[in-house]
Image 1 (cartoon, one colour):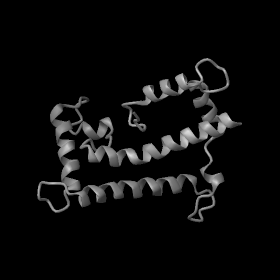
Image 2: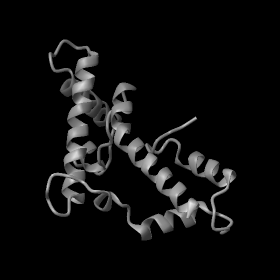
Image 3: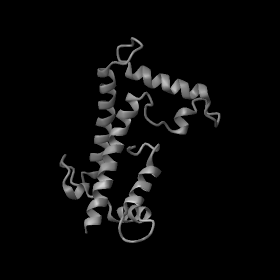
Length: 151
């Protein structure tokens, strides 16, 4: 039972990290992920460096509310708040089963089958628990994938 609680805690932390990641990447100048179709503006079936640069410039221009060619903390914060608000709204659309504008613990409870699959994937030796080495391997595997980098 303690192992399940640990996994829930780990998955909750990962979920929070995913929600915060766009803010972090905006602060680092990385922006949010775009789909291939959004990047392939000329619909050639290939994304060119020019298209990638244009997308980055468009994201910058959108965040540069006053159009002065610079991003202030307020502008970056506002862009992050806009994205956070959209994510929160989507979360409520998916999770608020009774549409009361509030999320109960039951509505936020992760899918047990999904947790079990993720747990089994991390529990490489099938011991029924996650060792420090398995936990560290999971963190290493997740680094660089926009899923809550740590250490």
